[in-house]
Amino acid sequence: MSAMKFCRECNNILYPKGEKDRRVLLYACRNCEHQEVADNNCVYRNEVHHAAVERTQVLQDVAADPTLPRNKDVRCAACSHDEAVFFQATARGEEGMTLFFVCCNLSCGNRWRD
Image (cartoon, rainbow, N blue to C red; front, side):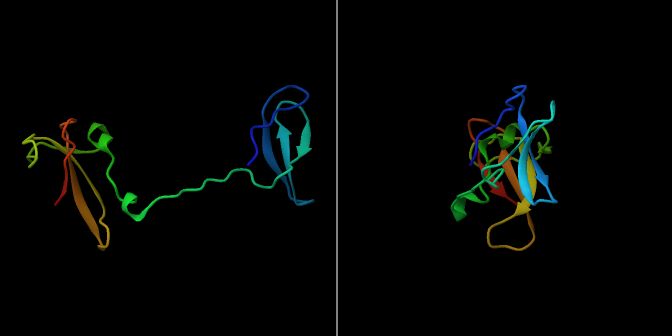
């Protein structure tokens, strides 16, 4: 994968630009008219490697997410804290949505589902 490229004329960033007529990838400056042919046709490549158990893990900082709804009518079985955030997601190996709760006590982080 190539690193960021900079213009030889004005030192600004060169951005990928496809020239469809010639079917070639160029790097072009948006400040001046400088262009150069890319030495590799791969602009960006993101490889994600993870095990099956990682796919539906709940992150510890979910309890601090201000965009998730909170419920003060539930009690954590681990620490007896009376506030939890909740969200819906698909559970492993099940069809349909499941309601997940995460304890808002940051030192606890207990997770359970309804």
